[in-house]
Image 1 (cartoon, helix red, strand yellow):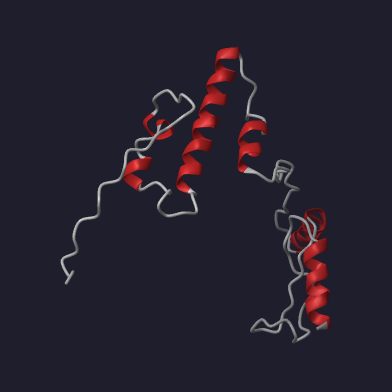
Image 2 (tube, rainbow, N blue to C red):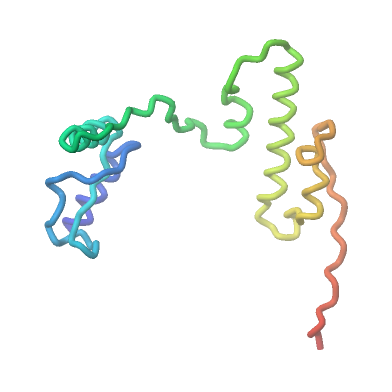
Length: 156
Protein backbone atom coordinates (compact mmCIF):
# COMPACT_ATOMS: atom_id res chain seq x y z
CA UNK A 1 0.00 0.00 0.00
CA UNK A 2 2.87 2.38 0.79
CA UNK A 3 4.51 1.63 -2.56
CA UNK A 4 1.22 2.33 -4.35
CA UNK A 5 0.81 5.62 -2.50
CA UNK A 6 4.38 6.63 -3.39
CA UNK A 7 3.77 5.76 -7.03
CA UNK A 8 0.55 7.77 -7.07
CA UNK A 9 2.33 10.74 -5.52
CA UNK A 10 5.12 10.52 -8.11
CA UNK A 11 2.58 10.36 -10.92
CA UNK A 12 0.60 13.32 -9.67
CA UNK A 13 3.72 15.43 -9.08
CA UNK A 14 5.23 14.68 -12.48
CA UNK A 15 4.63 16.77 -15.55
CA UNK A 16 5.93 16.02 -19.04
CA UNK A 17 9.22 14.18 -18.51
CA UNK A 18 9.68 10.50 -17.88
CA UNK A 19 12.94 9.16 -16.61
CA UNK A 20 14.73 7.12 -14.07
CA UNK A 21 16.87 8.38 -11.28
CA UNK A 22 20.01 6.75 -10.03
CA UNK A 23 18.58 6.60 -6.52
CA UNK A 24 15.49 4.78 -7.73
CA UNK A 25 17.33 1.87 -9.32
CA UNK A 26 18.00 -1.51 -7.84
CA UNK A 27 15.60 -1.58 -4.91
CA UNK A 28 14.11 -4.84 -6.13
CA UNK A 29 10.53 -3.73 -5.54
CA UNK A 30 9.59 -2.01 -8.77
CA UNK A 31 7.64 -4.82 -10.32
CA UNK A 32 10.03 -4.70 -13.29
CA UNK A 33 11.99 -7.77 -14.27
CA UNK A 34 15.35 -6.26 -13.31
CA UNK A 35 14.06 -4.87 -10.04
CA UNK A 36 14.36 -1.28 -11.29
CA UNK A 37 11.97 1.42 -10.20
CA UNK A 38 11.10 4.22 -12.59
CA UNK A 39 10.12 7.68 -11.54
CA UNK A 40 8.25 10.24 -13.59
CA UNK A 41 10.21 13.48 -13.52
CA UNK A 42 9.15 16.99 -14.38
CA UNK A 43 10.55 17.87 -17.78
CA UNK A 44 13.15 20.32 -16.45
CA UNK A 45 14.54 17.73 -14.00
CA UNK A 46 14.62 15.09 -16.74
CA UNK A 47 16.64 17.40 -19.02
CA UNK A 48 19.14 18.16 -16.22
CA UNK A 49 19.57 14.46 -15.40
CA UNK A 50 19.98 13.44 -19.05
CA UNK A 51 22.49 16.23 -19.69
CA UNK A 52 24.49 15.18 -16.62
CA UNK A 53 24.61 11.61 -17.96
CA UNK A 54 25.55 12.84 -21.46
CA UNK A 55 28.36 15.05 -20.12
CA UNK A 56 29.84 12.12 -18.21
CA UNK A 57 29.85 10.07 -21.43
CA UNK A 58 30.98 12.96 -23.67
CA UNK A 59 27.72 12.69 -25.61
CA UNK A 60 25.28 15.25 -26.91
CA UNK A 61 22.66 16.28 -24.36
CA UNK A 62 18.94 16.99 -24.70
CA UNK A 63 17.11 20.31 -24.78
CA UNK A 64 14.04 21.43 -22.91
CA UNK A 65 11.06 21.18 -25.24
CA UNK A 66 9.63 24.69 -25.39
CA UNK A 67 6.73 23.93 -27.72
CA UNK A 68 5.18 21.11 -25.72
CA UNK A 69 1.81 22.32 -24.57
CA UNK A 70 -1.25 20.56 -23.33
CA UNK A 71 -4.69 21.78 -24.21
CA UNK A 72 -6.59 23.58 -21.52
CA UNK A 73 -9.92 22.68 -23.08
CA UNK A 74 -12.15 19.90 -21.82
CA UNK A 75 -14.46 19.65 -24.85
CA UNK A 76 -13.53 18.94 -28.45
CA UNK A 77 -15.80 21.77 -29.58
CA UNK A 78 -13.84 24.23 -27.40
CA UNK A 79 -10.52 22.97 -28.70
CA UNK A 80 -11.51 23.28 -32.34
CA UNK A 81 -13.19 26.65 -32.00
CA UNK A 82 -10.78 28.40 -29.61
CA UNK A 83 -7.30 26.97 -30.15
CA UNK A 84 -5.16 29.45 -32.08
CA UNK A 85 -4.00 28.52 -35.59
CA UNK A 86 -0.34 27.69 -36.27
CA UNK A 87 0.20 30.96 -38.09
CA UNK A 88 -1.76 34.17 -38.26
CA UNK A 89 -4.17 34.59 -41.16
CA UNK A 90 -3.26 37.27 -43.68
CA UNK A 91 -6.86 38.05 -44.62
CA UNK A 92 -10.34 37.78 -43.17
CA UNK A 93 -11.20 35.28 -45.93
CA UNK A 94 -8.42 32.95 -44.77
CA UNK A 95 -9.64 33.21 -41.18
CA UNK A 96 -13.21 32.39 -42.22
CA UNK A 97 -12.01 29.45 -44.35
CA UNK A 98 -10.09 28.08 -41.33
CA UNK A 99 -13.17 28.49 -39.11
CA UNK A 100 -15.28 26.65 -41.70
CA UNK A 101 -12.75 23.78 -41.88
CA UNK A 102 -12.82 23.50 -38.10
CA UNK A 103 -16.63 23.44 -37.98
CA UNK A 104 -16.65 20.76 -40.69
CA UNK A 105 -14.07 18.75 -38.76
CA UNK A 106 -16.14 18.94 -35.58
CA UNK A 107 -19.23 17.78 -37.46
CA UNK A 108 -17.27 14.94 -39.05
CA UNK A 109 -15.73 13.73 -35.79
CA UNK A 110 -19.06 14.03 -33.98
CA UNK A 111 -20.72 11.79 -36.55
CA UNK A 112 -18.01 9.16 -36.16
CA UNK A 113 -18.07 9.22 -32.36
CA UNK A 114 -21.79 8.73 -31.79
CA UNK A 115 -22.23 6.34 -28.88
CA UNK A 116 -25.39 4.75 -30.29
CA UNK A 117 -24.37 2.40 -33.12
CA UNK A 118 -27.62 3.12 -34.92
CA UNK A 119 -26.74 6.85 -35.00
CA UNK A 120 -23.02 6.40 -35.73
CA UNK A 121 -22.00 6.86 -39.34
CA UNK A 122 -20.72 3.99 -41.42
CA UNK A 123 -17.52 4.48 -43.39
CA UNK A 124 -19.61 4.76 -46.56
CA UNK A 125 -21.63 7.58 -45.01
CA UNK A 126 -18.58 9.31 -43.54
CA UNK A 127 -16.73 9.63 -46.86
CA UNK A 128 -19.60 11.75 -48.16
CA UNK A 129 -19.00 14.45 -45.52
CA UNK A 130 -17.74 17.84 -46.77
CA UNK A 131 -14.69 17.55 -44.50
CA UNK A 132 -13.58 14.57 -46.61
CA UNK A 133 -14.90 15.61 -50.03
CA UNK A 134 -13.67 19.20 -49.74
CA UNK A 135 -17.05 20.65 -50.68
CA UNK A 136 -18.47 23.68 -48.85
CA UNK A 137 -19.75 22.92 -45.37
CA UNK A 138 -23.11 24.61 -44.76
CA UNK A 139 -23.50 23.82 -41.09
CA UNK A 140 -25.65 20.74 -41.50
CA UNK A 141 -24.81 17.37 -42.96
CA UNK A 142 -27.56 14.83 -43.43
CA UNK A 143 -26.22 11.35 -43.97
CA UNK A 144 -27.85 9.10 -46.50
CA UNK A 145 -29.40 6.04 -44.88
CA UNK A 146 -27.05 3.10 -44.96
CA UNK A 147 -27.91 0.17 -47.16
CA UNK A 148 -28.93 -2.98 -45.34
CA UNK A 149 -26.11 -5.39 -44.76
CA UNK A 150 -25.75 -8.15 -47.30
CA UNK A 151 -27.13 -11.51 -46.27
CA UNK A 152 -24.57 -13.73 -44.67
CA UNK A 153 -23.48 -16.82 -46.51
CA UNK A 154 -23.89 -18.81 -43.34
CA UNK A 155 -27.37 -17.59 -42.31
CA UNK A 156 -29.78 -20.37 -41.54
